[in-house]
Each structure stands twice: as C-alpha cells, then as structure tokens.
Image 1: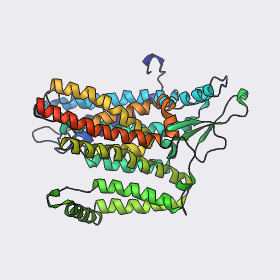
Image 2 (image 1 turned 120 degrees about the horizontal axis):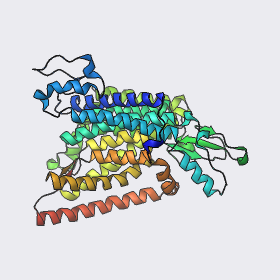
Image 3 (image 1 turned 30 degrees about the horizontal axis):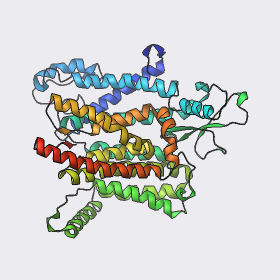
Image 4 (image 1 turned 90 degrees about the vertical axis):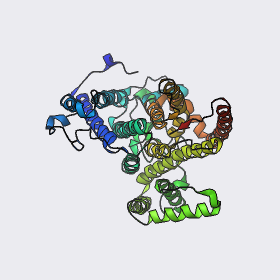
Length: 453
C-alpha cells in the first residue's frame, strides 16, 4: 500500500517529515514527563543530577539523541534508542500518511470509485479531481491524533496506565477541531441529490453530466441524511443530547470509588456527593462548566459548527460507553477489575476525532491485535496484565488508514438504525458469558485470572 519507490519526494514532504519528527519529540516529552513516575530523559525535561548541561543541539528531533548518549551512565546504555526510533518513525510515518491521504486521496477515492461502480457509470475517477482542501484538514487531524496515541500507548506499555494529562487535552482538541473545522472528520465520498450543508464539490469530467460528487465529513447521522432533530437552536433536544455527552465525559474524569459494603444506595450517594464537589472546584469544575457554556454557544451560533461539534460529542460518548460497558461486564463476570479506566477516556478522545461509526469498527478490530499482543506477552514475559490501550490505538490507526475500504464494506450496517445496537448488545452479553466461563476454567486449572489494563 505504501511503496516507497512510488513516492516522489518534494520540499512539502520534507517539511512533513520535520513536522512528524517534531511531533515525535513532543510525544517523547509526554511519555517521560507526564507518566505516573516521570523520568528526566527527554531533552526538554528537567536535567538530572550528575550530568553536564544540555546543549541546544540536544533538542533537535532525531539528531539530538546522538549527543544525549553522554547521559548513558545515568539512564542506561541504550536509553536513547527508543525515543530516537519514535521520532524517526513519526517523521517517516507522517510522510507516508501524507502521500496516502493527500497525494493519493486514499480515504476518498476508493469510496467515489465504488459508488460509480455500483451505479454502473463507466467513468474512471481521476484522483486529482478531488480538491486538496478536502483532504488536508483530515490529514492534520490524524497527525495530531497519532501523536496523542503514541504518547498514551508507550506510557501504557511502561506503567499500565493512561494519564488524563494526555486524554483530556486530546479530547478538547478533538472537539475544537470538529467545531471549527468539520472537514477534519473522516471523509465520505457522496453523490447527493442536493448540495450538502458541509462538503466540497468534486468536479467531474463532461461525460458525467448530471452527476455531482462531494467530499463530506462523516457526521452523526452518516451515511443517512442529517436529521432535523439534530439541528441547533431553537431545537433544545439537540442541546440536551450534546450536554449529556459532555457531562458523561466530565463524570468519567471525576474521582470515584465504589464502596458497596453498606448498600447500593449509600455507595451511590457517596459517589454523587464526591462528583458534585469535583464539579464545583478547579480544575474539573472550570473544564466542565466552561465546556457546557461553550457547547450552548455553538448550539446557538449556527448549523455547520454545531453539526461538527455534536458529531464529536456523540463520538466521545458512544466510543467511551462501549469500553465502559466492557469494563463493567468484564469486572462482574471475572470478580475483579477487567480493564483500566484509562482505556475508557482514551476511546472517548479517539471518538472526538473519528466519530462513533469508526469507533464501533475499532471496537471489533482492536481485540484481534490485543489477542496477538497478549499471547506474545504471556509467552515472553509471563505477565497476564495486558495493556489494552495500545491495541485500541492500533485498531484506530487501521480504521483511519483503510477508511475507504472499510466504509465501503460496512456502511450498509449503519444505514439500518437497529442493526448496530443489536449487534453490540449481543456482543456485550456473549462477552460476559464467555469471560465468566473462562474465569472458572482458569480457577480450576491455574488458580489465576487475566486482567486487561
């Protein structure tokens, strides 16, 4: 899919490489400085005792790690290897992503070609007909999301935890992008009967008279038409939906400890009082009430920004709810915590960038990567605590890159409003049953349980 020989390198791609390497350096800073146990490895972090002062050249992405090797006596002989590879991989990876999403129009072209084929229109769709303005916003949105996922994944590998310091700013950035630049959402190639409210027209050859192609963002109702019940002011129902999604995220951020020994009612009341206190003091109170006011302002302001923001808010709630339910069902079936809550907030962040439809697909793709990674970890480390966040990120990256092919195959399921919820409900029930059976088998054979963090 990404043949290096087919890429004609240019100054633009060289610039993308430098930006990617710089984003890799930012990810490295987050990995070492935002972890639960910070380490003074990043050249942008604090200088540890016993090492000479750092030079300006140490802060250059990729190249700076050659000079940082002099700190090997403090951090270990090969401490610089992983961060160097992260920055180099981010640079090369963003060049490949730019070639695929921008130069080849890979997220849109396959969709338009499939639609023409289904309509039996004998037209070879030229990729250069798709305006660059339809693909650049998505590319930069994906570059930001990949940076956040890289930082979260390596912290999860190192410490089995995903810090809010990554997912909270990431979620806010995703919501801001969706409101200010709705075309940053995953693209859809369409042939609508009427011009869409958000979309960029794709000029077609003269042979296709009567056809009008557009690149639209994947919105809340996609692939169906935007419903009137989602429209902004004075439609209060859409505001209620957006506020519900927002406060669900705020509730997820609030510290909560379930103590059910004195009864469900008392445990629930204790949690509610604790959450209300958090909502009334900084920093969560500032984020929660400020965000609620901003959502109301966008709802009042107008259609385009509200369509993007509501899509991201529902993506946040839907994607997080799926992992949250897995956590609850798994914990109930296994009698212990089945998944760390950082995975929930991580998927909420991803949902603001990709939307709920893509995250449903991620939900089904990630376990395959997790199965392979979990087996390798059990064999090599004999460790049954599996960090699941990196596999959610791998699933998101797969759906992001192969979006055109994936959407061509599954879009029909989202046209039927009842099918996706029915399949998810069935999967949750079967998950609980299978985990309970597996837990009993492990207790009989090994006397232990497996946990996903």
